[in-house]
Image (cartoon, one colour):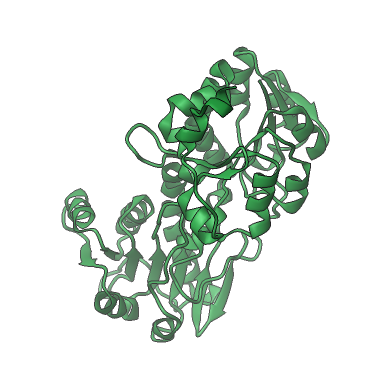
Length: 378
């Protein structure tokens, strides 16, 4: 099995798909791992570390892709990378096809690429392990970011998240009680903020209240509750996730206009379109803009702010799948591991993801049916 690791070309992406330790594990199983020169530099992993782990250092994306059965990267593929892929390869990245350009999925289908989206892979508990790991990071960072941009010098309303004697704490509103929301709540509570979480799932809200021993407020997600809470928020954290689908706008532009001047929006949901109508993707190098007097932070790849931590966490989750692929072959693993197969968006020229098929008016095929068809086994 030949596995290639591309250097990220998105200007604000600093992560790399595998650590040197992950490479060493695959090499010990018989894989040949090609790593593009300086792929790990921004995560503080050197070429020497990869070389010492058994990787072959190559000097262009063409070399990585042309030599590899499996190609790994973090960010969705750029046009220049799509052009280099060839028939029969397996391509791992954060795909987010439901909000991508049509050209991306058309290229995968035309070249019969097995395209696997990290954001769709499940484990044996039907959880999204890579999403969960990155969400734990993003949740922590969201509160750090909110605290920073609430400072008057950063364009915020000059509010401290925590209280001091005689001065109330800031109001932090979190939309979504998933991993991002819970992690953000933990950090915000630790700083002394007043925290409210809104979610449509009563069971999740019950779990959150038990988890934090009733130190936070909760509310069911409906328009009235959202409107009341948003108007009072000093910091609004968008933490809504719909697996593989574009995130709905829960906060309208008109409601953003009613927020307190200098409040901060951190829309972690921007990876899949954002849950605030005024949100638009920004970058780590230019992370904020102000609309209607409200500071917006909408960086899709927030965990790239801590690329070394994120890369280690990423490797911890991805490596078991790659180990099985090295030992058994990719198609055999996809047959045996339903959780991994749920990450497959295209296979042998067919779209195998319902959300992507719906977004581009394509027919969705069942991946397990395709894997087990006599034609595929021939």
